[in-house]
Every structure is written in structure tokens, then in C-alpha cells.
Amino acid sequence: MREYLAWLKAEAAAEATPPVNPPLSASLPLSVASPSPSSTSPPPQEGSLPAGHQGRAVQGGCAGLVVAVTGGASGIGRGIVLAAAARGCRVVCLDTRQSPLEGGVPAAEEHAAAGSGGEVLFVRGDVTERADVAGAVAMAVRRWGRLDVFINNAALDLTDPPHSLPQQLTSTTLEQWERVHRVNTLGYFLGAQVAVEQFLRQEPRAQTGLRGKLINITSQHGMVACPGNLAYGTSKAAAVYMTKQIAVDYAEQLIACNGVAPGKIVKEAARPVSQYSYDRTPCKRLGTPADVASAVCWLASDEAGSYQTGHNLMVDGGWMAF
Ligand SMILES: NC(=O)c1ccc[n+]([C@@H]2O[C@H](COP(=O)([O-])OP(=O)(O)OC[C@H]3O[C@@H](n4cnc5c(N)ncnc54)[C@H](O)[C@@H]3O)[C@@H](O)[C@H]2O)c1
Image 1 (tube, protein in one colour):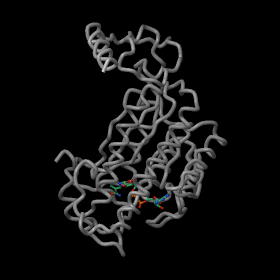
Image 2 (cartoon, rainbow, N blue to C red):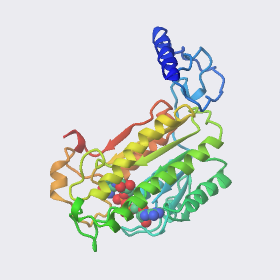
Image 3 (cartoon, rainbow, N blue to C red):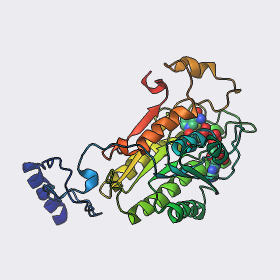
């Protein structure tokens, strides 16, 4: 009780003297904030903010960034791998398979044939196995010296045969629930944990003042219900929540965490498009992996700066605005 009263007193004192934003200055020293946030810390003094919190405009793309993408062999993940590598990133693609589910050649082969800058390195592994995720990150760090961006993307939704919908509360089997949450929720947790541990071991990048960026591929489901697909929808809600929690918990340690929420994405040109999804999308087209990849690459880039964290960026043709 005495501690609580002391805390209240300190809060009241802090309110009486509100913190002042320090003036912008490019010459502030690159020191690192203490990892112990406290509601009673004194307001920041001029010159005391770490580089990532100086609020200066940052320019630059993503050339040279070291990026890890889970589930990068197929679909949206493959689109991200190819777009990042084409922009000059050095990319580790972690997946249980190398050939794309939708057909076509592996991302590393397609990138090599395109002959653009950047590199793609495939690592076979399962996101539900901590050692596999840690191994992929360690390989990137051994090869390229650090990890700048980690993208949690691998996920299951169990809607293709032999699975059938609806998987509502009373028709979702324990096996379906556990399989989906094992990959989508445990997998994102492990990916985030391994990535943030690596970020905390490395110095901030001079360009942004950030140690690293975590990007979670979420979905509009997780913000609105996913009719007849309870396990998938709740796993995506967990990803949206995790994004905010990690952003808040690690902001002072100069780590940014954001989500990118795709709408309806077409991965195979030959697959029939749902009339409902088409009608429901204001842009009057469904999305492509390249649409999602553009948003991810922008968030990953230095140009996105260091003040954007805890955000879930919709790439849905306006679905969620309608
Ligand atoms: N496709 C869409 O319309 C859509 C819409 C909203 C959100 N999303 C999200 O986008 C992300 C990618 O979706 P997609 O449709 O491209 O998926 P996809 O099924 O086409 O590809 C997923 C990839 O993840 C890999 N993978 C699955 N389990 C894995 C595991 N345990 N370890 C490592 N790799 C594993 C698969 O082998 C595959 O290469 C997911 O997070 C999904 O929830 C997709």
C-alpha cells in the first residue's frame, strides 16, 4: 500500500511538470536507452535520447538489409523474399519445403535468374521448432554479421481438402485447433523471441537508430471475424495483439514491431476467385503477393524511419474500410 501511494505521488508530480520533447538534432550521441522503463522516470533531457528516438527524417531504401522470412517458399512469403532480394536485401527464407505450394521454381532460383542485387538463402526448418528458427537466424548472422528485419509469415488455415469448413466453435476439432495455433501462434511467438534476442545483442543501425524490426503478417481476420474458421481467426488475432505488446515492451530498446494485414490475396492465377470477395473489395480486384510485399519492404526500409511501431498496416483493397 505504501509503495502504491508513493507511486501515485510520483505520478502526480510528473503530471505537474509534463515532459518536453527535446529539439530535433542530428548531432545527438548514439547511446542506448536502459531496458527498464518506469512510469516515474524523469522527463528526458536535451541530448539524452538515443538515436532511434531523435525523430529525424530518415532516407534510404532496403539495399543491404539482412532479412529473415518464415514460410518464404510459397505465396505471400515468396513474394516478400523476391521483392526484398530485388531491392538488394540479403534474405534467409525459412520453410519446411523449398518448392512453392502454388507451383513454379524456388524463390532462390527465380531471384538468381532475374540477376538483380541481393541474395536469397534457403534454410529448411519448421517454425514450431525453436532450434530451427534460431539456426536460420544464426546462419544469417554468421554470413552477414547481423539481422535487421525478421518477418513472421508462415501460417496454416486448414481450409483446403481434406479439411472442410465450417470450423465453428462446435465443429472445430481439437486436432485442428492445435495444428493451427501451433504454427500460427507458437510459430510467431518463437520467431519473435529469437529475432528480438538477436536484435538485443546488436548495435542500432546508424541509418535509423533501431536495433531491428519485427514484422508480423497478420490478416483482416483477427480484427473482424473469419466466418466458420475459428482457429485461424483467433490465431491472427493473437498475431495482431502480439504486434502491439512487443512494440510496447521493446520500444525503449530500439526495436520496432509492426503488422501487415493482407486482404484476399490471389496466389495462383488459375484458381477461381470468390465472387463474394471480389464484390466485397472496394478496389474491385483481389490482391497479389507483390501488393503485400511492397508494404512489407517499405516498413522494412530505412525510409520508414523509427517512430512507427505497434501499427497493423492493411493491404486489403479497402476491405476493412467498407
Ligand atoms: N492468402 C491470403 O489471402 C491471406 C490473407 C490474409 C493473411 N494471410 C497471411 O499471409 C501469410 C502467408 O499466407 P499464404 O496464403 O501466402 O500461405 P501459403 O500457404 O501460400 O504459404 C505458407 C508457407 O508457409 C510454409 N509453412 C507452413 N507451415 C510451416 C512451418 N511449420 N514451418 C515453416 N514453414 C511453414 C509453407 O510450406 C508455405 O511455403 C500467412 O500468415 C497468412 O495467414 C494470407
